[in-house]
Length: 141
Image (cartoon, rainbow, N blue to C red; front, side, top):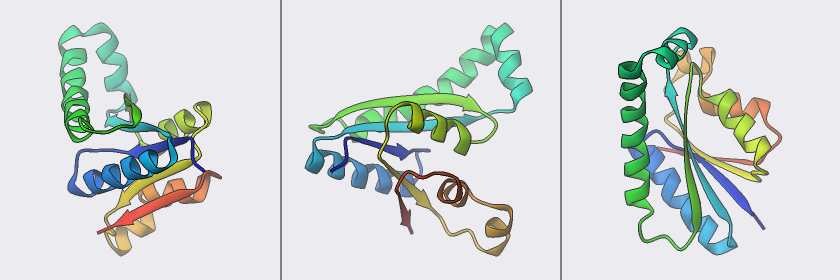
């Protein structure tokens, strides 16, 4: 049924739960798993990293820690997978751009249910649910 499943991954316990569920769904469907992480950095910081090897290295190290944690969780997986780390000021847009470019047909992500204030200002899960046409499975605590 699904050929490409994307899981939003930030290394949290809830993201780990979403990753496990997405991996199981990939195994059942013979799908490819796309693990997607966004290092949250301002546009100006991202631009500075282009000319500062130390800053670029710091951002790369943060992304590498997430990549290693996801690889460790997937070490026994039979699924084909790829782990993508991008720098951006907000996570939803680059994730959805990637999903659309790569034929993702299911998005799996966690939602912590942070309450009224977060709902008012919008969470990543809320943004994704309201913007994309791709079916989205939200894992709650």
